[in-house]
Every structure is written in structure tokens, then in C-alpha cells.
Image 1 (cartoon, rainbow, N blue to C red):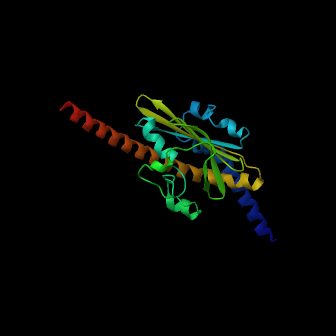
Image 2: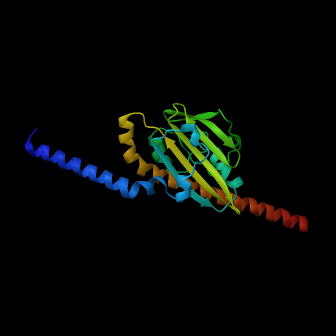
Image 3: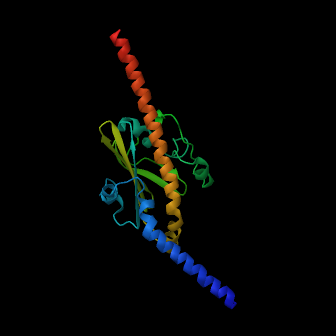
Amino acid sequence: MSPVSGRTLVRLGAVSAGAFCAYARFLRRAVLNWGATAAEAAAVLPGDSLLGEADGVATRAITIDAPPSAVWPWIAQMGPAPRGGAYTYDWIENLLGLDMHSADRVLAEFQHPEVGDGFGFGANRMRYAIVEDEHVLAVRSADGNWVWTFILEPREGSTRLISRNRFRLPRLRDKIGMIPMEPGSLVMERTMLRGIKRRAETLATEEQEVTDVGSAGVQR
């Protein structure tokens, strides 16, 4: 190895280390906790006990102007085809072989998840570990290294939707690979939460219109 190439490697290493330190200090918390309050990020939530010792935790949240009953259907049907997709960038997910096709309608056949049931998710097999209708839905990977939980909290006509990912990284390459994955996961999950918000608010509006029409008919 020439002296020049050696110095280049040292510089690249220093730049990489500096970039990682800056990310860890200034950006990582915001990336992992997008939309969540400090209290939500620090809270012990349903599903946490399914993976007690986690190498990483991401808590992201959004407020939806619709009741939990309009939010839950979109959570319940999530998953690869023929399920309802993940409401994010399908083309990116499908490059990874996930077979995601985000639905804009409620799929009646996938509205009743049960503990123990599951679906494939790339190389993972995900199974429902907690199901509390219109409140909590938690799935856990077959290898036990990933738990993804959705919590729906009613807020005077609206819903606070919290998404928590807990993951274990058993190998060094997993830990290293997660560093660039974290910002990417934010891009995907933020779009997912906004996609659920749009669908739930639309559904709530449609249901209210049906109710209003029915009430008008009765009054006549």
C-alpha cells in the first residue's frame, strides 16, 4: 500500500467517524423519535415486554383527526399482498421483494387479526403477539429480534397513533448496517404514518356523511 493510499484511508476513516459522531449527537434522537413527544419516547408502552433487551428503539407518532375506529382498519390489514400494504413507497419496498401494494379501501377479510396468526415479510415471518381491537396491535418476528407495535390513543374525537419498533442486533454487521438504515426507516415510516392519517380521516368523513344522510332521512 502506498503512503498516499494509506493517508486517504485514514482521512476517510476520520470523516466517517466524525459524521457518525455528529449524527449520533445531533440527529439520531430526532430520526428515531419523529413526531413523538419526549414523554411518548420515554414511556413504557404495550409490546415492550415482548423484547426486553433491545439494541435500538424507534418511537414515531402522529395525530389523526379521526376516532380509533377509523384508524384501526388500516393497521389491521397491513402486510404484503393480498393484504393492504404499508401505505408508503411501494416501489422501494418491492425492490426488496416485499410485495407491498398499498390499499385505499378497507379489506374486510383482514379486519380481525388474532394472536398467533401472521404473514411473511421478506425473510421474516411476523406473528401477532398482542391484539386489542382499536387500541394495540403488536407483531413479532419469528427470530424474536424485532417487535413492531401500534398504539391508538383516543383524544377527544381524534387519535394519537404511536408506532414503536424495538430491535435486537445480534451481530456486529447488523449493528453497523443499522446506522444508514435509521434515516431510511424514518423516510418510509413517516410516509406510512401520513398515509394512514389520510386514509383514516377520509374514512371518518365518509362515515359521518352516511350518518348525516341517515339522520336527515329519519327526520323527514
